Length: 200
Image (cartoon, rainbow, N blue to C red; front, top):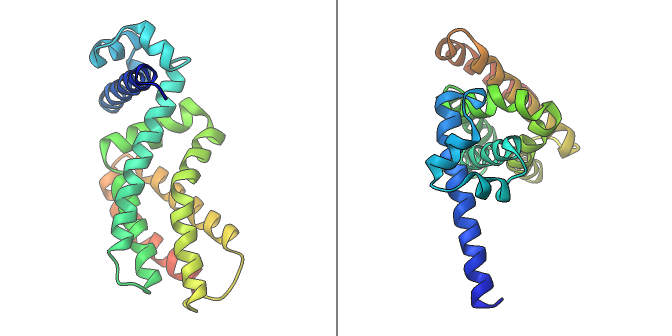
């Protein structure tokens, strides 16, 4: 790639990053419906034309923001799971589940991923993003658990999907509750028993 093309690609990536960063902050603070593209472009320090050069519309920018938040949350979860004693697969999954429930009461995750996400992107697209970020981690832990005899050999994909589905439903319950902090506290033991039962 020539220096000119590389510079242009770098500028484009910088513009895209600025837009996603600004939109993430604004969507997290105010919600999707109350933030316009003009405000996002202004906060990002670019023109609206530059915004529409990077994204077809506001929905596509929002999708990029959801991807960004999901990526950060899953990186945190992976770090926590990785810090658990090797071979203790139940503890790994419980650590990941607890971290996901903790994230569900963080204002940014709650509003962008759990409240606005399904409403703006539709259930199928929202679910696809979530699975792409979280399913691999869960499947990897389950596969290792089966390989080491911690749990019985069985098809990994259906078990991973069932577990991720349960955790997402738990997080949605917390995010939509009148008092998410209380809901998070009540949901913790429920998820713990569910994970333990699925691995028994």
